[in-house]
Length: 359
Ligand code: MRU
Image 1: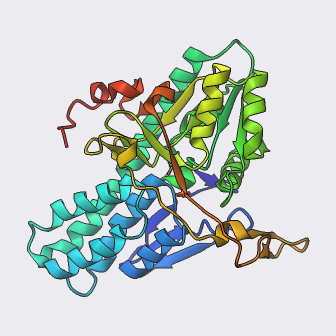
Image 2: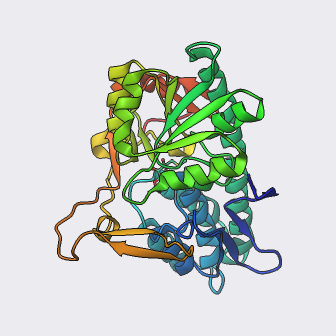
């Protein structure tokens, strides 16, 4: 996607050196900065601290992290230790574990001397596949939106968190149909939820602003009223893990939007690549929910009138807080799932991915 007219991906290998550059998403939307990752520890820290975030991008970063981890030694012990370090960063997004499993099944059968090149090439393939899958999610998702639109007027979409190109390598998942619609000249507007406590909605607004897509930022709690008032064609969100029965883990607050959408009769659509579908996970109850630090609620991030980024305390350091980062939307509240293969209802995931063996 473009930033000030220049095409960017969220992660890319550095020419000539065994290193990876990322867009530091903790600086956005107030500053655009690039950070270089030189080691598996750097990659793990970038995932843990959410400099990179979003299920698909977490997976792609982990794949590159494993390649970085083989810089000095490429024996089994080093490879497995690097995979363990990366796997322990965040629990909910299954793309992390999917990417590590794919990398290990590619690398472990190889002699150590062949592993470094194979690791970089496999990581690059995973990144390119993600771009193609998201582009195709955009195409299938747009067809679904047009098939379900209320009338000939402006297409009104509500979203939650950031499932745009910043959460993938490019194009995004939930925002891919939005970009496809806009680029096709379709009149579209997006209701963007702030998504407390880390405000990923501000990343969505930043992306849409860069692309020129009309949007309005709202408080998370405004969603129920806006949906009940009518005039919204669909709620479109991403996912961190979709269980075999169609239950969906996504950013905290997603389930509340699904409930409000159902009450208002508005279609609730989940967009995610195959790498986010976990057929080994029977249902939502089996999905680990990340609990993040309380300071994400006690402190606010922003920039002052001089544009200097900083943090403000809104709760005492001793205030008791709870900060689950994701929730589970039951399959019964999901009207459609869109992947690179097409669209299906939540209970028919296997029809879209028949190759998925049990477990
Ligand atoms: O905590 P985050 O910012 O990594 O959470 C991201 C989300 O919940 C996204 O909606 C999801 O990962 C899909 S990203 C295409």
